[in-house]
Length: 186
Image: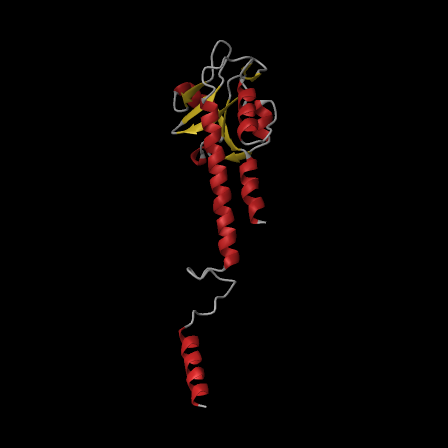
């Protein structure tokens, strides 16, 4: 009997000092519900992926500096016009196929305020007496990259210059990045 009491006391003492039962629905370190942590983790992962793709887009576009303008052009080998350049950059880096013409690209993307511009957004200008007749990719710090005109090459320009400021038609965001964020939360 004495051995039984000693064993029972020992078992009770061990049980009292044992690790607490873990709730499989919460993170043991933070107490955050696992489902919430998983959704947050997915959101942050998708956000990072979108940021990486945006960085890739801008870096890729910069890699085409000096490629000559060509009306109707859509490859580095033949040259680019403005919308062909934008379309090629989005197709190559993000895998999102934009329409071919600048005004179609404006119609197919989400309108944003100029103050909301982020690298990778599209900027449109009225260069042919009609809105959205020219397009470029915003690279940050008030600058954009584009294929400007015959005889010129892909280059970076400052949007605050008087020529571009007078002709600014609007800013747009390509919805594919937004759709990825939404899809990951489903």
